[in-house]
Length: 187
Image 1 (cartoon, helix red, strand yellow):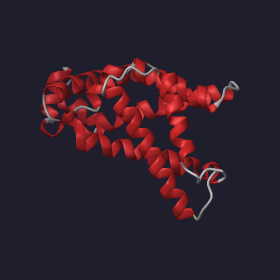
Image 2 (tube, rainbow, N blue to C red; image 1 turned 120 degrees about the vertical axis):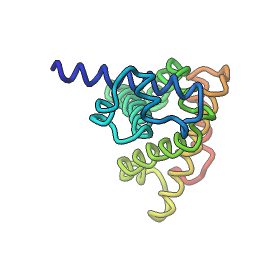
Image 3 (tube, one colour; image 1 turned 60 degrees about the horizontal axis):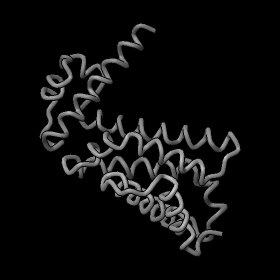
């Protein structure tokens, strides 16, 4: 239990240190030494938890993905609609907008988009059978449609958050619903 708390604290320090550094310089120029200095943690401890600085960024992105999935599943299990679940997920992202803006800043462009699409691809892979029931076409066509739609939704959400647009999570949910209803591929 004590070791778990120590690990959580150490990872939080690395997270905060990395976000602080990303605000100041390009991600590609952040070294392990920089991160350890900003976090107040030594190199040996860093390598006990991570192989590289990009692994810290990847972990942050996956934490968001897992939290969003938890929120979504909890809403569905509570009997709410997919739209309400989506709105709850967007509310969570909006509440964490300042950190997300750092993650999606120009300093992380090439890294974060790769991790973001990794999350999208994982979601599609894990939910493919359920999603296939709603889309007509061959397996390849279904995969391409899912990736295109998910990529569009991902871009819409990131643009909304990073551009500080004034729409509410409910309004973005409605816009996503319209986006998904545009295509005739959905049954």
